[in-house]
Amino acid sequence: MAAPQIVSATRQALGAVGVWTNAVQVEPAAVQREVVARIETLGYGSVWQGEVVGTNDVFAQEAVWLAATSRIVAGTGIANIWARHPGTAQAAAATLADAWPGRFVLGLGVSHAPAVERSGQQYSHPLQRMRHYLFNMGGRPEHLPIVLAALRPKMLQLAADRTDGVHTYFVPPEHTAKARQVLGPDRLLIPEQAVVVETSPQVAREVARKHTAKYLQLPNYVNNLRLLGLDDDDLAGTGSDRLVDAIVAWGTPSDIAERIRAHHNAGGDHVLVHPLGDSPGDVVRQLEELAPALLP
Image 1 (tube, rainbow, N blue to C red):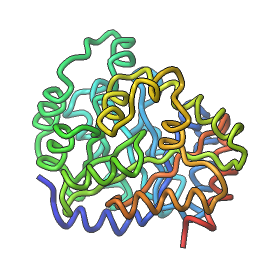
Image 2 (image 1 turned 120 degrees about the vertical axis):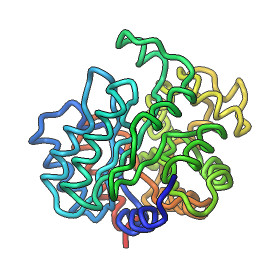
Image 3 (image 1 turned 180 degrees about the vertical axis):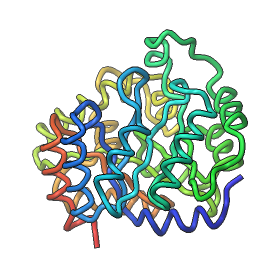
């Protein structure tokens, strides 16, 4: 069950806007430290990353991040439940929460069949798997906020019943409003928003389609977008302009700030800006341009 004091404290620690990035996932530790320290200096409230079995370990990496900074919150978006035993995940998360009080959020997720099966495991019954995983983690470590990667109603409800909230990904503000309806007011809602700081529609959509093409191969995301009213024409190939513009906010920093406000107005507590770029330097450059429009 969610702990009201943890939800309240986490909302305060996170603030309004954070960062989601995989740009440093395979970079040397020195590069990771430099990038995360710069994100903290800019004033963002958090920094999150994903995890792929066999590619990176989010707990080890985020210990590096936390040690290199003094304020920013680190979140796993997500810690892949196929990567480790639930007891191991709980122990690792408890260690980070104890070492850096108030600065770590555990986000858990079921990932996707292609990624899991490449690691030699059989992907099946993701909702049941997550329910059992939470049960087998045992008691909640003190002061540790836990959220689930969730898109559709059953996983959203599991998060509302068993954790402090949800971290959503590859969603427009319309989904944020639907998620808040399921969660109610007393759970965290942390949506990711992909962005490109670029005013040329052609250039921005070209960058955005490199992003959407990958995720439109994954049934979890496609099925969720269908629930939001997108059809076969929107979902074909790398996505229609309608879909690309719904998933990726592009334009000036002011244009992108408007999309972030839309997530907040729909019920998001803390919106994760996800700059799309080919390098850590490109990601940092966009965050620098966005900071005056997004942060107090």
